[in-house]
Image 1 (tube, rainbow, N blue to C red):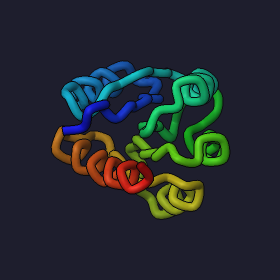
Image 2: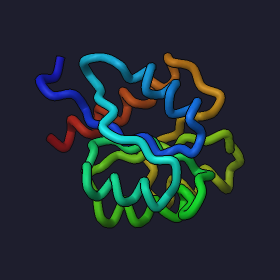
Image 3: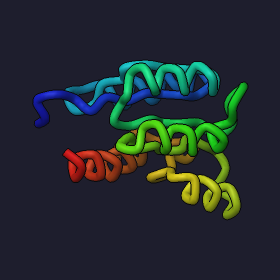
Length: 129
């Protein structure tokens, strides 16, 4: 077990999705340090909190997740970004990967899939420590 939990920021306009993710992430290994419901607030919190992982919805009010992704990668290069989306079409996935996303959490999701995706992201974070 890590001494300090992995800090996670949730950026999703759906309060139910954020609540589900928060519940799944409850424990010793992860800590949800902030939540945002739009792109502007998400970017501000990301820069202020500098989490190790950001769960970023593609479709959010203000700046979309895909538009926000390059800004996050540029300003927080060590932060792992996982896209949270219901979109599985090839173009959307390709745009996110080219933008620097480390992976996807597909809606609707279950706890096992979320934790598997976060585990992969966690391995990337640990490799940088």
